[in-house]
Image 1 (spheres, helix red, strand yellow):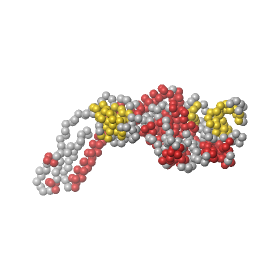
Image 2 (cartoon, one colour):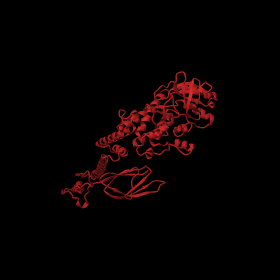
Image 3 (spheres, helix red, strand yellow):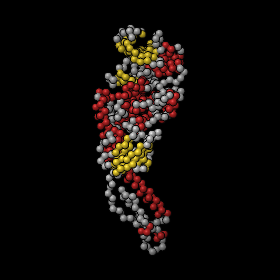
Length: 489
């Protein structure tokens, strides 16, 4: 670029350019420090109110001194060529960096989001809202593994610039909150919505609300219409998908109340699956990415096995199924998975039989009270057998000849217990398909959401139906050796 200068800064190369400014790698000649120089287009300063707002915003962010916020070194807004001097981060933005994240370990993306939330917690406490968070505004220093949020406070200047030039809504429709899409003022919760949208992008590789036209994207944002993240990446656990859904809620009151709360909830999620900060950090991943991922997947699978065992011990079947569902996405061939699934099935069957016994016992007792019975009996159910009911011809009457109400009340005999049946060996079939796929197994449709079944060894017909696609029909061989996994994309 020759010897082009702006004040004491010599421009070295163009880093990037946008609608409002161009960013250059520059050197501060007196100190020889390399910086990023953001030079605003002249048209931005045509209106005095825009200049006043820009000066106020720059003054506000001048004091945001935080290691995860890009430092503002100097504001030269009164120069002939208005510019802002910023810290230079050697690396890439998160938009370009996303391709490096491992598809099989979505929890790693949570670590990047925790860094962003730490920066927001600091800025929101000081009354500064970003208003235009997106992956390209998050910088990754690959040399030190540092995550840095940029353009703090300048988003308002960008809004003012675009409104001056085009008179339209400004921001990044793919990541802006619904209230922004509807023209309302952004607040701290709007930033948190954008963080959730960034996380969706990191774990799926797609923008949650992207459509072919900007207006269609804005409509999707306003209505909160996005595809379930686990259908985009089956490795995403249901617990993580639920947190994403909360962050992307249309109603701001249903989102996280603050950056501090959102950060704490995601940290708790990582801790719940055995990924505490002591063993799971960005610094370790940057040092040895491949080894880190393999070690983390092993740690994660063993943690989920232990968690499922504890949940089964306290009869928490719903929690155990959640842990085992997550385990199936991490290590589908883990040797403990079939045994733990069988235990879930056994406990669920015992629970159902227990409920049946309580309902039958309560009904019989109520009838006996109504007729004033003086005798009553009970049927002791076996945990693994259906209730036995004696036929009416086998019911005997009391021998007491005295006329009384009890004389006309039958006393049921206890039916002899049938001989114990041998347990039939069962195989496991697991479906890894998206939520819109309808499954028909052995010519019987499965209930919506059911993805695990137990079946005797043999050959079974199966059909998968998805709207807009041709049905898939096949036969599946169920064995006792290992679970059958059926995947459809």
